[in-house]
Length: 199
Image 1: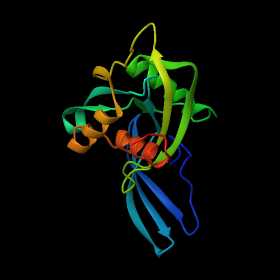
Image 2 (image 1 turned 120 degrees about the horizontal axis):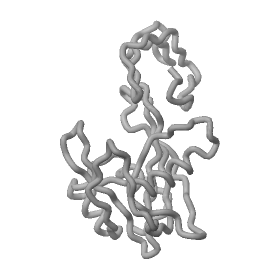
Image 3 (image 1 turned 180 degrees about the horizontal axis):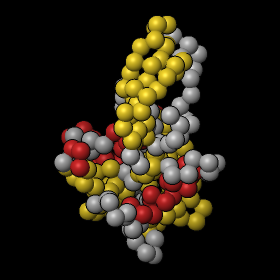
Image 4 (image 1 turned 30 degrees about the vertical axis):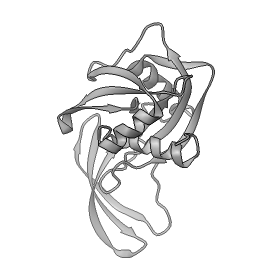
């Protein structure tokens, strides 16, 4: 169960009795887990999808605008605006969250931290904890500047554009439903709650 990460551990009253693999590929594993919980001492089964953790980077320019990439998403058959994000490949690296965030910022948006820039942790969250242990670490990168080489997305990615939006434009896109990506919505909410955005 920890081929992708060891981020999820049993807490008080939880116990994984067994876990039977139902399906696996390089990206996900589907397990039928038998567990007990704090309120259910009798073993019960649950289908769990194991997936790598990810890093979502909210890039902010020196003039306070956010960079969003527009990316094709096969499962929803749509192209949507979102913050750059990617999976953590090397979980043994103690600096994996920072390294992954900076890699995705460069690859997907074609930007990097400016000299003296900062990467601020916004914590983590679980995009869909009813069936998967996937988790996303949220970071704010500010200020960012374009790289000399531009964006270099992976072959499997289809990013159609990268644009800067003011905070007010961002809020309008969220309110209208134009921004529908859970990672992007969560990062925005976390920045507001932490007092990092004047809204």
